[in-house]
Image 1 (tube, rainbow over the protein chains, first blue to last red):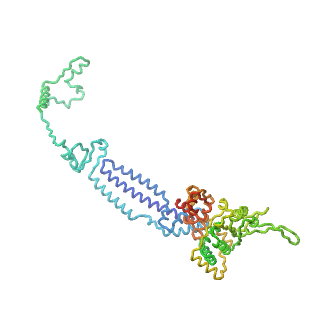
Image 2 (cartoon, rainbow over the protein chains, first blue to last red):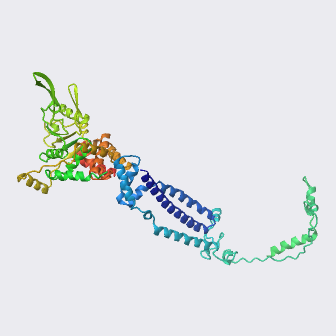
Length: 264
Length: 311
């Protein structure tokens, strides 16, 4: 019976739509949750699409594979075994099968598509998706990154988690951790080497800058080698004595530099 | 198309005027008739087997004959024979039909007849015709053989071989009535109350039509697979069974389930029909092994075990 065939098609179509809607909703939730997790790492958030799409494809296939008539029979006990018998014998034309189809069509009037939806669950999922979206938008403005996975992959032995100043008493190298401080140089305590502060003091030297290169001088005039080692060019094959050609005032400069270092 | 349940309810109601209880026996005999097949009735003497068959024959407007099998019964006693008839001084051979030329034949204690006599009956069951000499006589339809067996007093009997028992669709176990039913039997048959005349519920033509309708009852694919699972399980279960059922059992189980569905006013076969009919269809088609017999199991126990396994 043509009408019965069409009715079965409708049932399949409606149930497919409901099941696929649930799957899409779940995959959106997966995407948002994974996106939120990836936000706290240095991995691109685009990777959140991977599990979401994988779930979408797998779950859609599984749901479409399901026998929709058995789903209806489980929900409506008065159709148990009747509906699938009528569907399996749809091509047989005899009075008993026609009678069965008429009975099933009559019973299908009491079947409502809304009974296959889970309105509470779906509403909760939609609400949760909206909340997650807002959380993501708010967190995105703060550029928070707790875990440096790429850094960990480069230097796994030196990697340590750090959150603010906690757990850093023993010092050591800490890679790219920002405990939420706006100071891009990090906290002062991080700059500690052991228990002592490093005091770096660059003493000034008493020298004048005398030999300033003229910037306007064309490039071609630049000598390949400084004049001090012109003799190096002449001496190609040993034995030869290399004499440097450093001016006397420069001698004094170098000598003084090393004297000061030695005194320190 | 109408619902056929009221017809069968009317048959039960009318039959209950004569037969007390035995509703399952009546139902299963009706199932065998709707499937255009034969049944083997097994029960102790005095359980109204003959009375039930005779009552059903009158309700369905069918000719009934009874054959009391004994070891000296000859095949010609069943099929009929040629006799010399003298008409106007002229002698001719005339065929005298035997008791098999009826619609319902009750073969009492079939296991007491010799194998040769049994085979004459079985040929009629299978072919729905009888060959005597050079002539073949087609039997009037519908034709059913309801054979009975006594589970006790097996000495001097010729048990039906499994290959021939397989030709019966059902093996119906006739049980004792309940105490209340037995009381009613005493009241009915010891107080001189006249048994009312039974009215005919179905005609031959209607019964033949119902046989056609029975085959048209649809069955779902997964239920067909369930039937095949059960039958193949009887062949694979070597823990309890020596021999399993043949494909004839699969056909029989499906047909019997269709008939049961129709009797219960349904237009489809249910799993419950399959499970209910598994017992009468399979109990004479499977053979228990020594281990099962040693444990005191019956074929019904083995069928229960298989149904639980297949579920």
